[in-house]
Length: 112
Image 1 (cartoon, rainbow, N blue to C red):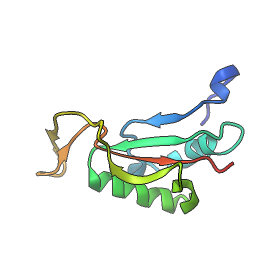
Image 2: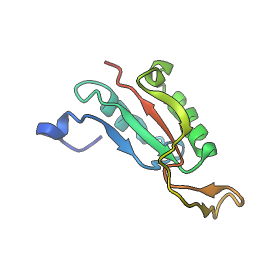
Image 3: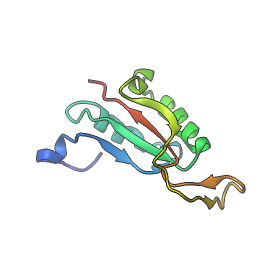
Image 4: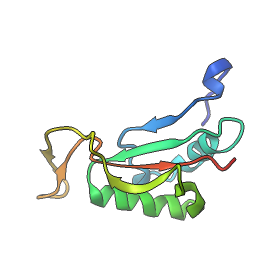
C-alpha cells in the first residue's frame, strides 16, 4: 500500500495473495482498502493453507471493518479450492493439521 503504481499497474484487473496470513498481520488493512476502493477497485482473492486459517482470515477481515457486501457475488466466502496443491505437509505449529498450498480461497469484491 506504500508503493506508487503507475500506468496499467495502477488499475489491476485482480489482486491475488497466496497464503497472506491476513489473520496474523493487522498491517493488511491499508493494502486491502487500496485494492478494493477506487481508483484500483479490483477483486481481491486470497488463499489459505486450510479451513482453520481461512476462517481466521475471514474473522480478521470482519475485524478490519470490511462489510459483508464485499463477499457478495461476484465475490465469495471462504471455500475449498478445487485447484489446490495435490500434496500437503505437516504443520510445525499445529500438529495434525495439514498445510496445503491454496487449499481454501475467498474473494472480496470491490466497493465500487
